[in-house]
Amino acid sequence: MTDEKWDILDENGSPTGKTTLRGRNFLKNGEYHLVVHIWIFSSDGRVLIQRRSDTKEMMPGEWAATGGAAIAGESSYTAANRELFEELGICSDKTSLKKAFRIKRRNSLLDVWFIRSDVDEKELKLQKSEVSEAKWIELDKLKKMIENGNFHNYGSEYFNLVFEKNEDFKKAFV
Image 1 (cartoon, helix red, strand yellow):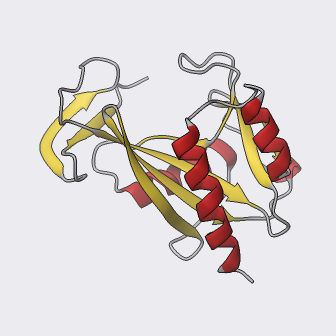
Image 2 (tube, helix red, strand yellow):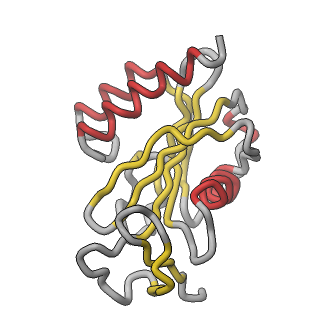
Image 3 (cartoon, one colour):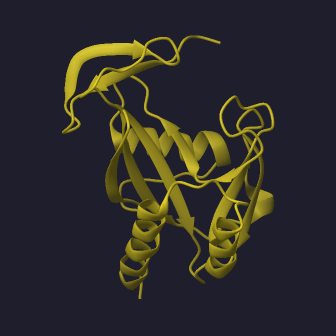
């Protein structure tokens, strides 16, 4: 496997012209790398979640959002589009994939994207090195999984924004 190269960004998300290799160099204060999460919502209000592969170094076997780090040269949209296709086999475009919000965390800028899809679980093409399972669940069940520690804890600020912005996203489709 080749080393994954990341662009180093400033606090506003602008490239600094420097890069780093994943897991090799620690980012300094004021340096960030771009991470994307993609939340897939069905037309009937369910959410598609995925369980990470047991072989993953970070968060093995945990239920979590689809996503990952942007590689050098990628925009947020390009990274979200790539991660969605690589991990689940879901195709998207600029009209279907919508940026919901950005939050700053430690040394990462996390862009959260939403997409509307009614793909059948059986049609998904899971990237086995990343994803061991995916399933549609009701939002109430997801909230229970979060409360019970059965879904990765991204923090209350993150989840509050996901659920708040999902309400706005749903209205756009009514």
